[in-house]
Length: 198
Image (cartoon, rainbow, N blue to C red; front, side, top):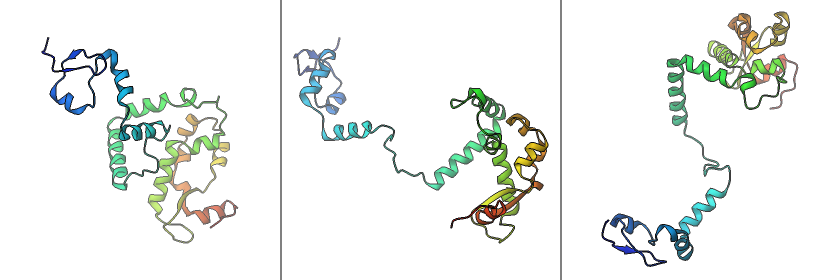
């Protein structure tokens, strides 16, 4: 046993603490009296501020914090590299959170059209169409671009009798770039007969 070099502030029991530990703390207490010593000494302003911050549930002290574009780009690139190197893990991860395994599963009540539009394959198709064209086919703008199905998605789903996402995934015509066209938001709304608010 080491030679005691300090004592408990509550009971006076001799204790050994490393010199660097003694320098860091405001009081020394044995294990039985740590809570009592904390009550006697109270909290510093810094500790109180940290506790108040931590008690605001859900914020994690990052409310309003925006990542820099460089950080987002780096994270995106490293994620793409990892996904390319581990396609089997990506597929397994997708299977684990798809359909009835997903935490928000409600018995398959989503409309098929909406479910297909949320698929990764649809995101890849849209990005490829926009990358190919690079501008609106009507007005030539390069801002607010959207991918448009020339043959509507609903028509393809009916025509090929697609009943679920797996069948959609295996239907090559759904992901055919020839059936895609790039339009700006305004002209995409007009093509579908909707009112566009500037």
